[in-house]
Image 1 (cartoon, rainbow, N blue to C red):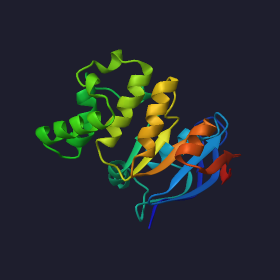
Image 2 (cartoon, rainbow, N blue to C red):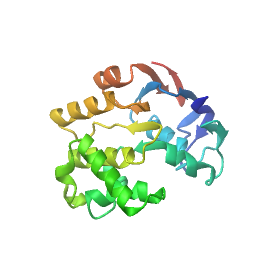
Image 3 (cartoon, helix red, strand yellow):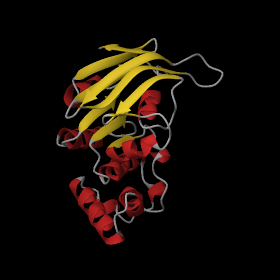
Length: 216
């Protein structure tokens, strides 16, 4: 069973030409697939459609074996597919790092003690425990990027949707992130301009061109 099966997605923002004009994609369990494309080609838009943050004008989204149309259909999808946004400030909104990372597990129904155990486990695995009690909005851009990944991993998703994950990272932290991603068991759909990262994380590639996904 495919994790995601997108067929003929069409989408345009109000007052602008359609950015997607029949985009189709299949992502299987364990698969690591990258998407390249010019700025404004619709890569971030595609990821947001996959988790129901945007609604296509036409086309079909199947996720985890079921067609997803209305907002309630996507509640399960967001539990099982973790989207790491291009801008961490779109993802992090709690006062401290620990609270941001705990938010997802608590929202899934874990008790406070179990959620905090999950927080400590994830921050330890990513070598971020030194940030646990820091005020989130005072972190550097690179620190926010790593914490946003931790917040998604704390929910133990089956698939990661990564939107330009090395944005705002210096070379050392970018290398750390690559090592982390290489060691994860999840399927990955990676959107990035970084050809080296695509080769190391998700060498099977596609390109968004003229609103459609074509082999890279």
